[in-house]
Length: 372
Image 1 (tube, rainbow, N blue to C red):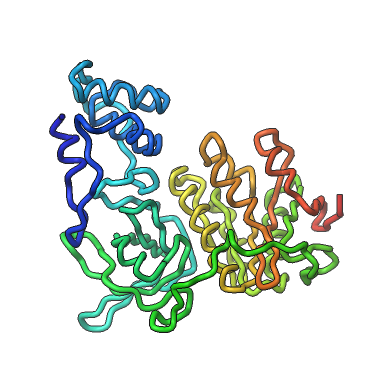
Image 2: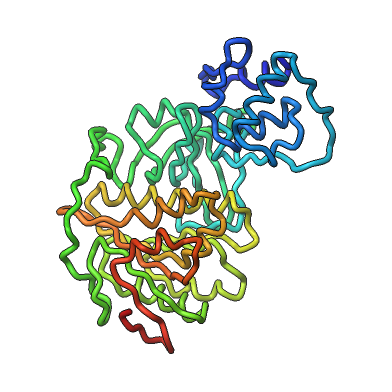
């Protein structure tokens, strides 16, 4: 077993939580196959597999095991090649803080403190049974490592908005305790919570109040236009005017010239990234926004999501559009709560499958909308 692998799989997480996964003679192909392609690429890179980013999952696993068993010589380490990404999504058990572009923006309060008590607020991201983070993002980005056992004690899920106390442990911000979950004080929080997937759907029947648009709570409404600025302004106007109780705006390709439109958003949670930010950042933002919408619906809220636009979201997704599909398919109506999705769309073969989920289609032309 290489020194890297031994160190990699026996390191400790904070608070003495041991990483249970080990690699060696007992590590099987099946066990390695449980890790994501991104984790395997990083592991392969450190193990000595040549050009791991160009290889498929099965080949990576095969070469990792061969090198570990001494059947294949590892590639000599160099300073060239693509550097590893520590963004949290795929590094199931790395004891490394992921990064998040500072240009990301969510409407959250900044971290504050009273004497020796330091508190913050942000969105939970549970990656797996060993790794969880809370993200606090506004003018700058802060990531808090969160012991998963703490989240499990309260049955906290990805997308939950929490306030918490934290400490600085070895230059790592670590969550110590949770005070509030989605606006509910921890002492009043019911751990026997509703599950989005267990909520029985009903046919959308309640109309949303948006000018003359015939859209109901729980539907997917797609909008098609040729002018990007006009599209953005219209989707923001729709979000502002609708009578949903909670509103979410998603845009992962913000340019400097477009930031002025964000000032028009009213009472909406902004999940946005600059066009220059990494695809990893954009994927995280989309995933957290999707999970947040589910948590809101579980609490009986009527949620409206504005996606500006679907092509941009799909362009930063993986090859099977996992996050894009999860986002577009989240719309749902129930007897208590709903999620409605408005999205700027375009005719594009890449997203034909998710385009078929539309309940209503509108054409945007000269600031007017026409039902298609």
